[in-house]
Image (cartoon, rainbow, N blue to C red):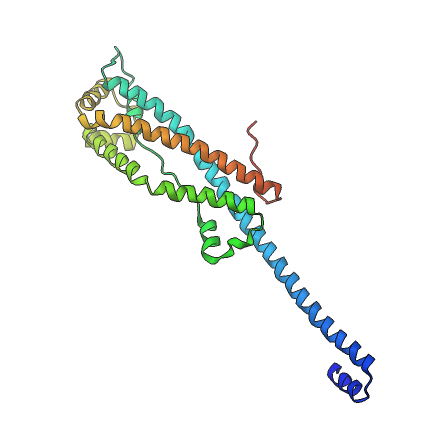
Amino acid sequence: MILRRFMEHVKDQNWLAVGLDFLVVVSGIFLGMQVSEWNDSRKDRELERIYLERLAEDLQEDLRVFTRIYDESLQKREYIIYIDGLISGDDTDTLDPVKFMKATDNFGWIRSMGPGKTTWDELVSTGRIELITNHTIKADIAEYYEHFDRYHSHTHTFNDIQLRFTRMKERWFSVDQVLRHINEGFEGFTEQEARGILETMRQDDELKNIMSSLATVVEVFGNSALNDQERIKKILKELDREGVKGAKLASTT
């Protein structure tokens, strides 16, 4: 229709009409391109919102995990001080078997650290990381996950200590005691049994050598978990200011 009318105007040498027809065609093409760009931009912003909400969900879960790790590190420190005092000879007239058994079972156990990276890895691997338009948020999130990539390059040291602690426990506890712990907990253990285990631990040279390393690892994990909480809170506050659903920090009051 437009082409036929355009040709008629050319044939009639109606140059004003030809110019108007040309403007109509060009304007139509331009508007079509703009509408397409606007639609693509809208889709990108919607996809960005979805990814930011997923990242906020991952970070909220990380925050809960690192809060638990930090709280546990405080308990581990108390256990290590308690056990170190006992194996060093700071004995007492009475020994609480339940307290001793809980401390012995847990003082060298360390919860594994690491963030939930599913959403971030998807963004990076697909190239959709460019969907995040806030450069500050993008840089802070990238630094947060890169921190853990560097951390995991050194976990073999922590894993070695963890494995050694597990093997030492096999020397301290009899099979019967392990089964009783699994089925009944530590409530049924007597002070005499606790003292027998303590004496075995005092004669374990590997335990004496590893105590300082255990204390260092617990200190590192605790401090790292505390620092990671602050990193996460900073990012969540940035996301909350952007209006991202699920980014608001829970009240601590």
